[in-house]
Structure formats: structure tokens, C-alpha cells
Length: 127
Ligand code: THU
Image (cartoon, rainbow, N blue to C red; front, side, top):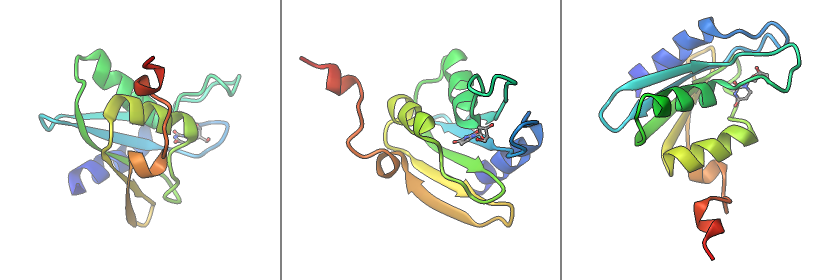
């Protein structure tokens, strides 16, 4: 957990957030203990911005990793993942612990299920 959190904090430095100045770092742990990282990348058209969590998840999946154990997300104020990321986290990672950490190293632990109760997912499409 410590290494994952540290990696997420380090990734804040890579964030490209010239519009919000809100830097986010993410570190995603695979079941075979590999870590995939992400940072937020903003766009001048704002809505094309990609969050750190989704960058990490898409990097991992594009490299062939599909099973995950935990994610750490670092921000200035310990902010919680946005709604879009909660959906992607739930669909791609299932129920995993989510560690959020602020700039003073305060870590809070929650889970994807707690963050997105009654989720819409593949089960919802079953007829
Ligand atoms: N952001 C993330 O990277 N992850 C989240 O879960 C919340 C928001 C980014 C998007 C944008 O670059 C900045 O934080 C402010 O919204």
C-alpha cells in the first residue's frame, strides 16, 4: 500500500493540468504486483481532459493486464474519484480498495463498490 501511494504521489508531478492546476496521480496494482501509473492530461477544450485513474487503467489494459488488486490516487486535498472514473474503475477492476492521499500524506481507504453503489454494468445488460 505504501509503495502504491508513493507512486501515485510521484505521478502528480507528471500531470499536465495548466487549466485547473489540480494535479492528480494514480497508481494501479495488478494481481501480479505490477504497477501501472497515470496522471491527468488536460485539453484546451476542457471536456477532452482525461483523468489520472483512467489513464492508468487504459495503460494497463492496453498492455494486456485485466485483473487488479488496488488503486491509489494522489491529489492536493485527498479528492475522491470523479463519477466517470468510478464507473470505469468498477467495470474494469471490480470491487477493489481505493486509497486516496493528500499532500500531507493523509491516506483514506474506500472501495470501488462503496464509491459506486448499485452500479450499471455488464450485468445490467443481461436479458
Ligand atoms: N481529475 C482526475 O484526474 N481524476 C478525478 O477523479 C477527478 C478529476 C482531474 C481532471 C482535471 O484535470 C482536474 O482533475 C480537475 O478536474
